[in-house]
Length: 305
Image (cartoon, rainbow, N blue to C red; front, side):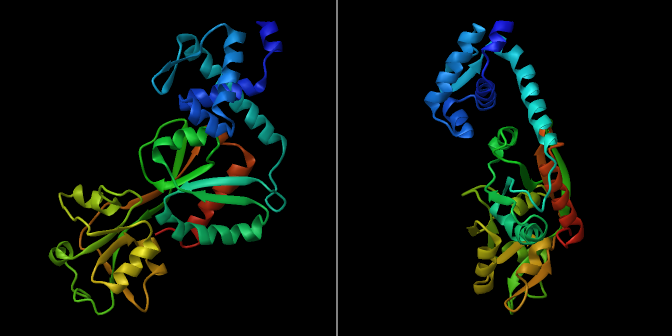
């Protein structure tokens, strides 16, 4: 075994980690920014080194062998410890760092999060690169583990280790409608349900966030129109008779000359927004600083309602 270790290439462990997490050659290659053939070649070398197939193809999936199941926890822990050790080696200095961070969130959240966050980065960390990308909830855990994502901002959802999370804000719902709308000042449960509604969702079908909350009360409120972001939906509400139900924390961005905000005529549970990260990166200095910055913005800059 000692001679096997002498032949070991650290890149083989990184390929093993990606394939273990993705269970698919193509997706593993995408996370590593290499070709599927390079993944296949690396795994062939690793198999020869260990004398075990490690993964067996079943249709589109690569299924781990029993030996692979025994090996994986130690390999993943060793890689995590190595990353943390290297992270601690160099202290993070925001004013001088050129580190790159990727945060995933739904497009509808960018309006309330990014302007304030970028404003602070411009002052505190002018050379830090921050990328906001669309969230894929199905691959969130793997993307955080592979560091394709560093943080996720999303509505509150049940998660378990190795994903950690905390509440950023607890929000109420409000209703936007155009000035001089027939329901202005007279919005009640009956005429709210009978009105036309525009909603915001990244999905082409299925209930939106507020529709799911209403359904839990036994209330069915379908929407006629659907947008991908609140800016477009607010413009629709300002030019039509449609009502837009949205989180109270972002109402101020749209309420004004053309739109009024009114209380939703139903008592819905608070809409929670959470920050998610991977436990393996818990103590990485740059990410720890960015998490703290985001938490402080929600606490001190009016992002919490």
